[in-house]
Image (tube, rainbow, N blue to C red; front, side):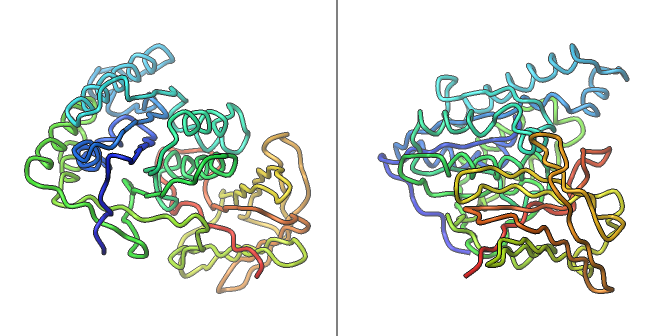
Length: 349
C-alpha cells in the first residue's frame, strides 16, 4: 500500500458522505491533513441518517417510529455531524446537507426520482473539486455503493476538469489495487476519535466499532476514471460488439442462494441516454427486464444455469459510455447490507 499523495493550498477537497458519521469514520484524518496544508474543504452530507430505527428505539425507549420521530432523529444526527466536523476544522459554512431519504439512494438511482445526479452535479459545479472523496463501489451498504454510481454519473455530465477520485469503505475492506494510506499523528488520531464520539446517537450500540476507525492510517483507494472490472467480484459483466450484455455470476464466489434477488443494471449510453433496468434472476430461463424509470417492461433477459455459474444475457442494450451491475434485494430488508456492491461493466475492445 502506497502513501496518500500530499495536499497543497491549490487543492479543493470535496468529501461526499452518505450518512452523518461517515465523514468522521472515513475521512476524519484526511480533513485535518488537507486543512493543515491550506486546501479548501467542503463536506456534502447526502442523507440525515434518519432511517436508523434500532439505535433510536434503544435510546428513546419506543417501538413505533413514524415520520415525525424519524425527522427528529435525522435532525439530531445532522447536528451531531456539524459538531463533529467543527473538531476537524470544518465549519458549517463548508458543509452542505441534501437531506435525501436514508436507505433510499438505490431507489433514487434506479428511478431517477429525485434526480440525485443533478443535485450532485450542482454541488460539483459550484465547488469544482480537484479531489473527490467518495464511498467505494464495493462498499456493502446500498446507500454507499449507490452513491458512488450516482457521483460517477454526475461526473460524466461535468464540464470541468475531472477531479482525482479516492474511495473509502466503511462496510468492507479497501482492496489492494490502487490502495493508498494516509498516516495520522497522535493529535490527529485523537481529534478523529473525538469527532467520532460526537455522534452520540450511534455510541450506545456501536461505540467500540466506531472508535476502532481512529487508527494510525486512513485507508483509501485511488479510483481510476476508466475503472476496470474488479477481479474480486462474483459478477463479470461484458458488452460485446453487437451491443448485447452478458453477466456471469460465479457460484463459487457468490456462495449463496439467489432466490428473491434481482440483477440491477445502471448505464449511460454513448448517445447520452440512461438505462435503469432490474430483473429477477432466482428462477426460470427468462426474466422480464423492467425499466425502473418508466416502471414498464422493456424486454426480456435470457438466463442459463450450470453448476458453476448463472449467465444472464440482455440483448440489444447498445453502445455504452459507462455501466455498472449489482446483484441484490429489490429493497433493503432487516439486514441492510448487500452481499457485495456494484461491478463495472467491461466494454468491447
